[in-house]
Length: 69
Image (cartoon, rainbow, N blue to C red; front, side, top):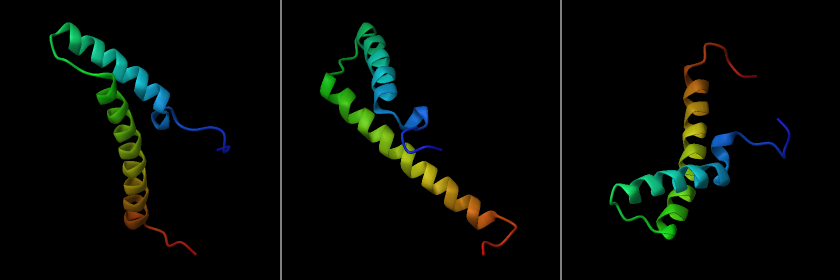
């Protein structure tokens, strides 16, 4: 994968858009969500997906049947 290409779930823009949609729906349902909440949530989700990716890679290496040389 090229350095200038990233997976969709690593994009703050994508998460920001999804959170904006969810916040609009929440506001329509009577739940107050501020723009600061959305920005913090987007950063948290991007960090969490990166950590989850690292964990999956580590678990995959541990459970692999072949050794790494």
